[in-house]
Length: 326
Image (tube, rainbow, N blue to C red):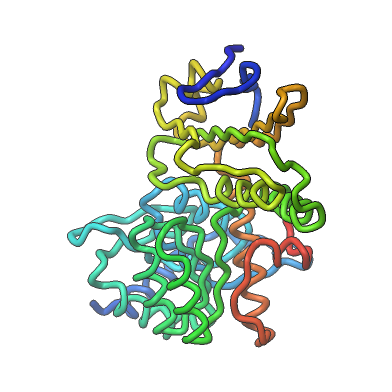
């Protein structure tokens, strides 16, 4: 096990990261859906289970594909379309018994309109790219498509404004891992009930994610905001963000098989005289924690839409509070 002392940090002792962790679209839709249904083995739904159409936008990415696979395993009806950021696309992705046709961005509105006609109670799950968040959300709101936004980035203020003005249903969360959400919720409670408890303490933050993650961790931002309410002053430019696989292996201790999919966070607090230190750490290997949370979120949102709930915008805290957990 190797100690970590990243550049530009002033920890009172080395930090240790554990290595153990864990264009007749409508016709095409009907055809593909019928084939998938006919070829799927007949299995009895588990007691109390729910099934509804779910469209995963972003199946060409690792996270989107993982969510689609989890949706199929949970007995949801995968809508056989998704979208790519590239215009010229001639590709299908097989998930379980469903062949998902990938369309370019210019076909989004026509394809989604046909999806609504064929699957009126569909829920969209978005795992695309940060620069697509707002344009995708605007389209979902224009068409009245309830959506789960798992993609981080974009302009959050405009995102919420789009949903509010359209009176659409949406669940928006930068973090879908249920246990991590519970941890952040606990941090928020502590910050609200004990403001200034860590006044004068020095905070250092390290986070390590796969190289493909371009934005800063939304979870880290939320936790830092809690520490600031607790009296800690922190400059976001000091955050150590590790994206280099070699450093992740040698310094952080990420298992090699999870280099392409992990989230390691460490928050280290030191008292002004260096006599007291606190560490908060959560390490995630793989994507299962996020995929399961995303499916729980989609089921939660589906039930809210079906009940015509007066509230229209939710987050994962709402899912946790109401017990919609797999």
